[in-house]
Length: 134
Image 1 (cartoon, rainbow, N blue to C red):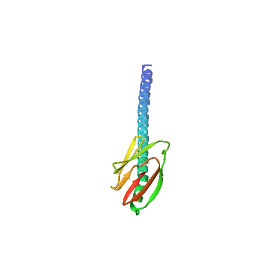
Image 2: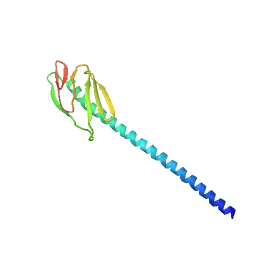
Image 3: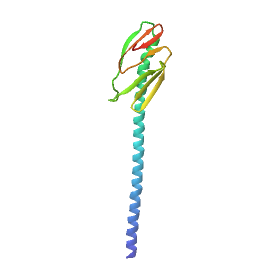
Image 4: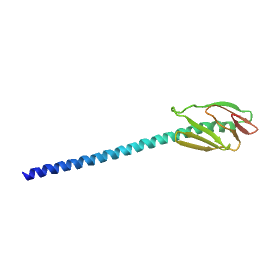
């Protein structure tokens, strides 16, 4: 009779240890998956900031590559995936895009004057200098 109770107690203990072990494994997998999802979202936000900066820089490089007298109006979207963002040119040298918690910086040539805005932007080239919204 004592042997039966000991086996039942041993089985119960082993079962509880097994359940605890499986729970720890489940939590570990859940934490790893959550971490990967967060990393993926961060990478997506960084890529969006880079894409917005590339869009603006392509317009500037196009204006730099053509002859004087170039004039074009281009549009930067109001929002991206429903989120607002910021874009500016600092010191006529750095193109900075801020999107959610990410920031991307591109460096520009020296012959840039002005600043970018969300929405319509006018870009022109006169005397070898690219003017934006001026």
